[in-house]
Image (cartoon, rainbow over all chains, first blue to last red; front, side, top):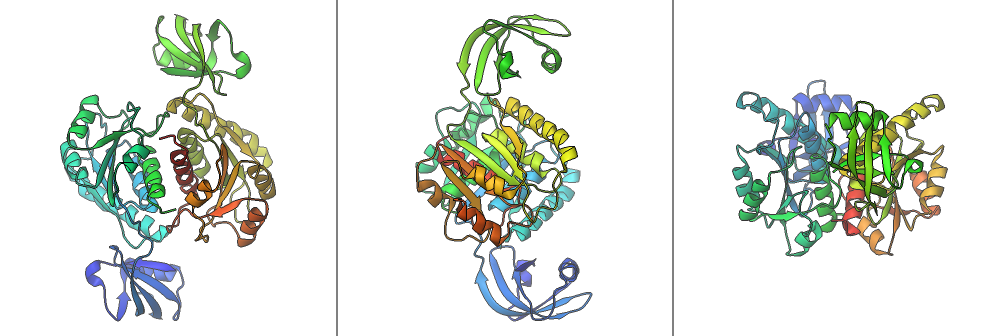
Length: 243
Length: 243
């Protein structure tokens, strides 16, 4: 079923008139009166609606049924990724959204080569949020994960450690596996933190452990910085019973 | 440790003289006599060697220790992917290699928009194999997964079904999860088959089931054709105890 995302404050009890991007989208899809569509508030609430009228500038919908989104993961997985080079963050935002991430948080570490300056950050965040919205729509999610940027590694550790389970993946860790970490205690929320291209420094790993993060391995092979978070996220979704 | 891949038939008992790409690579890395490197046959056997001499055109190595590669996955996971559009197959080859896939097999299905003609196939296969070799090197694998192309969907099913466990992921399957399939029997080899952008046709899914493949879901969210195999592969590596 086609999904339209609206702002939570624009949720209506009985009918909708969608304009702008949503109306354009409806036109492209050649929606016709009588067809059913889904209107989502991007935060997990949605309405099944019937198209009542389509004009070039707007589409009118009548609410048929309100419901909680059925496609959200039971576990809240937050992806903490050190700023990577080039468009790798965009790749991870798109894929992590498909895979069911709750939110995606970027932050600097000492070996980050690329980090956006404050000036370009507003525009970049807008772009990243759009990528998440588009991936949420395509994958049939009822919630658009928020993309956040934190100013420091310490801020990332402080925030990440608030989850039921906070994990850091480190290529030099050999004993603690992800499975051991996941089986150590039940979890409803999990933070997964990974480093940039050059990896995290040993001192940063110690700092994370001191902040309460569990340091784990993702196996004997060295994963690229954009592969590691998606591998961990897939395994966590599997472990938590999503598929 | 730096890895050099050579052909299995070029494996030597006592010393190596590497030329061509490998010599270039050694030059870029500024290797010096006395340093240790790894020479891999790309099929799981490797030698720890000491650099004895470096010249612009070649690098000489003395074998110190021969061993089986320690970074190969215990489970042989074969990734069967319907030809996708654009460079998505290249993406999957790179990532699946990092994640530990045993081999990657591309094949046509009825909804495949793109399929290489025979003329361009030789060059493409060469390019794909290079991507796998490069990803194997970067991720520290001792084996380069083979990239194969099969001429038909039927050929893919016949080959895939020979594994201990042969799985097909289908967005309309709702009851059988990957976890149920993996827990149904022990497995040392597993085939994972996924469709192209437009998905598999219902008749193709029935055909696969008749050929002995288990039809499974990867959860409630619709994954892109390049995301599904990597998500499944990550989960299988996790399930089989890799991390």
